[in-house]
Image 1 (cartoon, rainbow, N blue to C red):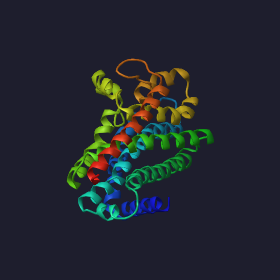
Image 2 (image 1 turned 90 degrees about the vertical axis):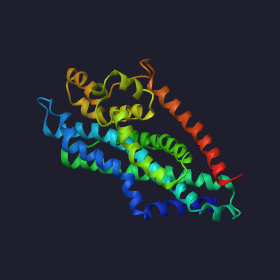
Image 3 (image 1 turned 135 degrees about the vertical axis):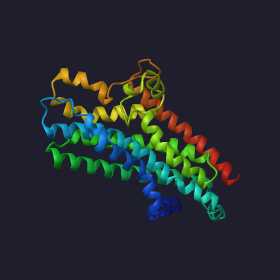
Image 4 (image 1 turned 120 degrees about the vertical axis):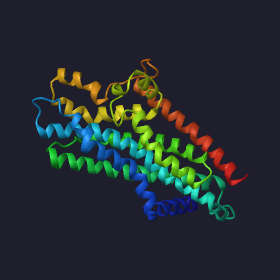
Length: 287
């Protein structure tokens, strides 16, 4: 256990000390926040007539951060997994392989680091979101909502990390990893209806988005974060804006599927991808 924790510590410090890697891990988040607060965010509250400015902030933050926090679990987990690519390309893994540390612990250490670092930094962003809403709107999320969102973020981190880990094990160079990091966050943002509501992109895009776990993760997180603001609005108004805010469940390929089953399927997919990731890493390290 000590050798595993030592490796996790090593990978964590390596990532945090690389300021460029940390910056690019947050780049898609920075771009998304800039787009929301400068342009897109105004659309979410411009049609709310008779609603106080404070409540508008409460609502818009729920919509915005519901997507940002999901993207955060993707970009950060991918950024941390950059350790694998650099260690492979610069032959640093060879130093681990000649030690008594078992091979599965070396591979597991990268997985644990990605999930641990991503969970902590995402929860920090959630805490900042809570403080922002409380300070600028006067509304504070209830303890139940805080715990629900925190639990979902940890769960989402596992799903996102396993997907990013699998993709990383398919890459062979730092250049390929950089290209993937540059486009993946933006691509997921559009496909999952995070940058703009899916109904704006058309039925065909909604059909494609329904097969992406991040779409359902975003919908579920938005619903939890908007439950309290919705309680402050008339039911008729809530029904009118749910489609625009992207909080309606869309099922899979046009078929109604309960969100619980979708999340369960995503969890199973995560474990399957972890297995294939382990096999890919074992081949790269040499049996």
